[in-house]
Length: 324
Image 1 (cartoon, helix red, strand yellow):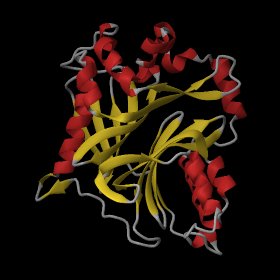
Image 2 (image 1 turned 180 degrees about the vertical axis):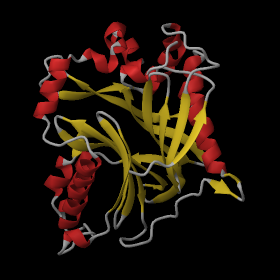
Image 3 (image 1 turned 45 degrees about the vertical axis):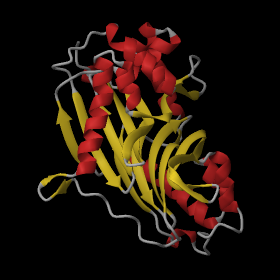
Image 4 (image 1 turned 180 degrees about the horizontal axis):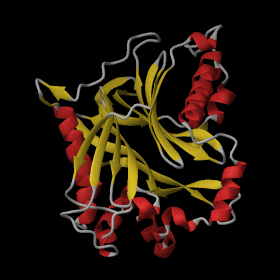
C-alpha cells in the first residue's frame, strides 16, 4: 500500500462523518458510529463476507474489472461497479463543440460500451493490457485506489458492499488514444516549495472542514462541485443488505450551518489531517481525517479551480475519536 504525501493541520475539528444523522433525525444512532452494530451482528456480517478487507482482495477486484474490459465482457465489468456509481471526467467539449470545462458523468449504463465492437481496448489476451494499480488506503468498508489502463487513468473509491469490493466513485482522465502515456504525476514540490496545485488542494480541503467547525455552510458548499456525490456505506437494520446513504450539495450547506452546534468541537485544537495521495493533470485523490471521521475525496480541476466532486466517508473506530 502506498501512503503518499501527508500534510497535517492542527487548527479546526469537525465530526463530519456523523453529519448524515442531522438529515435523518437520528443523531443518537449516528453518534454510535461503528459501535451501532453489536458484536454479534458484526460477527455475522464478517462470517458472510466472500471477499476479505485486504489490499490483495481490492487489487483482485480491480484486476477483474480491467481484464473484463479488455475482454469485451461488459457484464463482468458492470458486476464490479455499484449500480449508482459516481463516475466523472472533466471535458472541454460539449456535443462535439469546444466549450469551457465541465464535469461529464458516465453512469453504469455507459459501461455496456465495452461489450461492443467500438471498444478499442479489446484484445486477444486481456491480461496483457496495461493494469497499473495502487491501493492508497483501506478502512473498514471503503478504500482509495487508482489504476492506469490502456485508455484512461481512473481514481477509485472502492466499497465493501454485500461482501464484495465494488467501484462506487470514479474520477477519470481519458487518454487521447489507447496506449498513450498517461499524464505525469504532479510533484508535491516545485523548486523546493510546495507546488501550486498541492497548496490549493490543501487549502480547499481545510476550508471544507473549517466551514463545518465555524457553522458556515456557504464556506463548506463553496469547496464542492454542484454535482457533489457524498456517500457512506451503511447496513440495513436487519443486517440482510448494505446500502449507500447520501448527502447532497444542497444538504451540505444546511449541515455546515448546524452540525457543530450539536458537538462543540474547539476550532483551535481538534484534528484536521490531509493526506494527498496523488495529483495528476486535473484529478486529485485525497484523504481528510477529522476528530471522529474521515473522508476520501476526488477533486477535479474545472476551469482552473479545484473542487471536491466525490466523497466517500466513514466514522472512525471509537478508540480513535478526539473528544470535544
